[in-house]
Length: 419
Image (tube, rainbow, N blue to C red; front, side):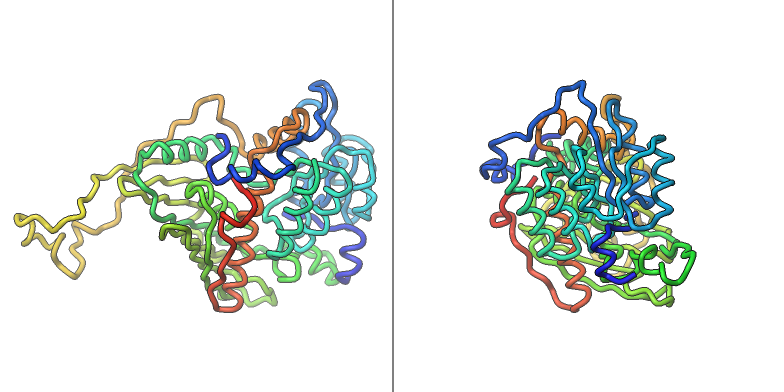
C-alpha cells in the first residue's frame, strides 16, 4: 500500500484549572464563544478514525461514559471493522474513506491514526464541523501542528488532545503542591520511559509491513519521542508553566538492526525560560528505569510514575561558604567521591495522597471529560494549546536528533496561547 492510497482511504490506527501562560489564549475570538452544547440527556455520537490497538482501547474507555455510542468506524484494514464492532456490540457503519466519516452524522471524531496522518485527518474533521479528540502527539511536523491549531482556532469546535495524565489525580496533586512551593523552585526535570520490547508487531503478509508497523518508519512516526516522550514533555510544560525554547538531542538504532527507521534509543534536552531544563531518555532494550518523572526543586523532589507519586524533602542549602567546622569533612571538600555523602538515596518518600473524587484510570477520566465538554460546550483542560505545546516540542526534538543541531522554538509569548 503506497502513501497515496493510505491517505485517500483512511488509516490504520495508532497505538486543575488554567495556568497563567494560558491567559493569552482567552483573548482570541474563538474563546469568546462556546461550541453548541448538547442537553445532558442527549446521546453523544462518536466516530473512531483508526481502529487499531489504541483506537479500540479508546472506544472501550469512551463507552464507559453513560449516553455515548459510536456511529462510525473508519480504517483501511478490513479486519479492524469486526474487531471494533465487537466493542460497540452493534452493526456500526464502517468507512474506508475518512471523508465519509467526516460527512456522517456523528458529533465528534476520535482520531487515533498514524502520526503522519494527524494533520490531514484532524484538520478535515474540524473543518467538517466535528469536535475532535486527537491522540498525541499532535502532528509529525511543526507545520502540521500549526495547521491543526489554526483550524481549531478558526472554528467553534472543541478539541482535546490525548494527554490523559492531565486528568490523573496524582499528577494534579503533584502540580498543586509544586504551585504551593512545597519543593521550592523547580529547576530541572529528569524523565525516563525505558522498556525491553522491540515495538514490532506481527505482519500477516509482507505488503502490510509499513501499515501495521508504522511506528518504525519516519514517514508515519515520530518514534519514541512522539509515542512516549510527548507525555513527559507535556508534564514538564505543565509544571514549568512554560514552553521549551530550544531542543538538543541524540538518537540511534542500537538494539534492533531489523530495517526500522525510527531510533530505538533517544536522549533529548529541552531548555525552558530561566535556565530550567527537561532531560528525557527512552530506550526499548533495557527496562531498569521504567517510567518515571523526577521533578527537582530547591527544597525537595517529586517522583511520578504510571501509578502514583512520592515527595522527598531535603534541607535547603545556603548559598554561602563551607562552615569552618566542616573544612576537614571530605563530603564537603573532597573533589573525589566520598561514598557516604554522595550515594544515591534509596529510602522511600512520602506518598502523594489523592482525594477519592480524583481517583480513577487517567484515560477513562480523560474520555469522560471530553464527553462532558461536548455536553457543556466548555473548553477541555487538555485543549489544542496543550497539544500544540507538546507536539511542537516533539517535532523540534526529532529535528534536533536527525540533524545533530539545536533547534530553537517559538516562545510562549508568540505561540498564540496555551495552558
